[in-house]
Length: 263
Image (cartoon, rainbow, N blue to C red; front, top):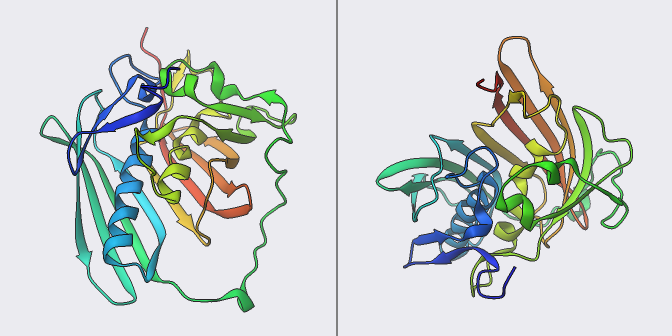
């Protein structure tokens, strides 16, 4: 990767972005991978929060994918759905070529010092550098996959994986993105790390991405303790406990449409 294009997007105005070659998807040649697009949308929401509601933090972020995310200029907007001093609901919309492709909603809750009550019951997760085997996600095609470094635990099996993922590729060229946005650009990798079935035979794209947080993440490392479950009626679920390099931060869920690859 060269220094000119070592980002997933370049800015094209206040609220518009153009994808680079590193944002390419895994399912089709002309689509974008949801991972960097989700990071871009979440970064945009976080920038809005810092400017308009600095006393609150995101507790939940949910992204609904309304259609194929084509490799084209993305325009973002933010609306307040439920204003409030301590609780607020905001919505971001991503538009490509006049069509809404992602609808994202985030609950903002008042931030306060709850150190005295803090604690979690999450299973221990090894720190970055503990895994040495290359993750199954690197077997997928696409430029986004090429841009990430990912290693998995030795006990990875179909439907179950523990992975650390990171990348030197910035979210937006020439900009310091928010800590939340830079970290969130890896969230959608979760659906590609623990294949329950061979993706050459079965498709299982996610139609959403929902993140619940109990701590604000930071850094460029994402730990994914992931399982993938398929039902007998065409539905699937990828669920993950997500970590940054300091420990667990929340839970991620992705709803899957499971279907045979066309002949």
